[in-house]
Image (cartoon, rainbow, N blue to C red; front, top):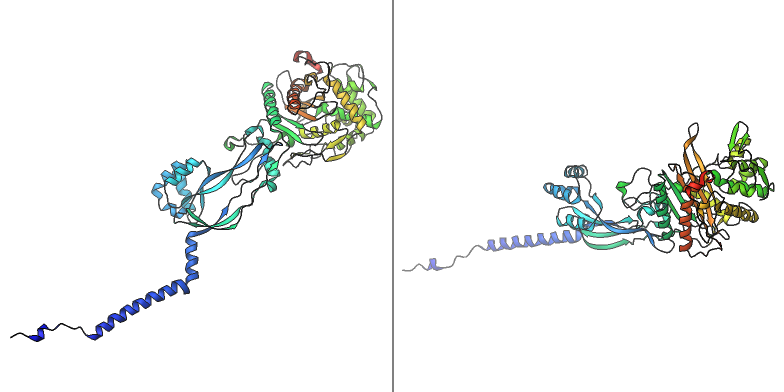
Length: 576
């Protein structure tokens, strides 16, 4: 007999159904509450925490303004480069791979590890700034945690050392440190922007989320420099310094009609594209920051002071016999006995005695006031960093010796740019233009230095110095009239002046009939027997000025005969 009770299906108790339903309801409610908590109650907090881990506000770099020459040719450009940075804590998680990273960045592995440990509390540390694109690609191919690339800008100077000391340079953050880069920092430097980006756990930018502030690029600046003339001046001047084994020197070429500096070079030079090879002090722009006694290049201003004071005319004669005179307890010498000479010959033969007698015939302050009006002892106003004011006594000289030596360029000092500015006054009928490194349409003038008539007469006298019989025949340029003056100065030292160390000068202008260009050439301590300004500085003037006149298409002013430069062996004592 079959048991029907056993065949019946087992039925669980009803309370179990209820318990299961309650459990699922609680789970669903818990999940719902969690969702509400995350999406509503704690939304702002959690969003902030997420953003803190993945959203960053970073600087958006702005490129620096470009420096160009007067024709628009680039002289300084900021180009985009990559810089490698890291989150130290994240990168240290892969400490075993640091040697790979160090090799890619050309760094010492132990120093890299030490640097990361010392900065482990930071979120951003530069590993290498301004690396080439291929190296940045090699680093990122390593796929290391916390390592990323940041776009920056690096300054590049196409002309290299040709414009090094003039333009100066910027630091690793593209901020001007020297030269015109520093002078016009406020104009050239851009204003970085800010943007919010999304980064992954390794610090790499995944997406630009929001531009908070647009970057403002720096403004371009057109300089007065003519790149063609700068190259010409650099080539010829460097060759002269090497030929005469000089310690260095400077050359300044400017327009007397606008005050624009067209070329400015120095030796020794440096290449701002190669900072590692830069020696201390090599970035000095000596044409502006170093002052020297100008010697006989001051004599035109002595003559101008005498002419303006009415105590002499070009025909006024002086007796310089026997080539020696005493003033107080001091002797003044000419290179030879010129006998009786007129004022014009004082300049063409560079007579110290003639210049001294002119100064002693004037009132105590007349020569000093002429030099003061010509800008000696004062900064030019061009705004170059570290510019020297040179030296001119605050008061007129009281003793006859001081007045006499001042007449031929001792007892004061001048930078090459100051001397060029002063000669620009002679070239522009007595009005001295303010030098400018920025392109100008017209000059801004200082007070008048001398009368127009005096400036014209002095220019005529300075022409005689370049003609046969003068001290500067090697400054002549075929088919152009040239006016200029040589200068040779013993260098001052403790206790007096050196017997075998000189500074050689030439300052001049062309075309002399209506000067368009003024140039000053200075060589510091040329070696050997050739050290006079007429021997070492005047030929540089001729080469650079002749090339500049042709490059600028300045018409010749009518010399009928071509002057043949006097050989060095024939110059002898006349090459002051």
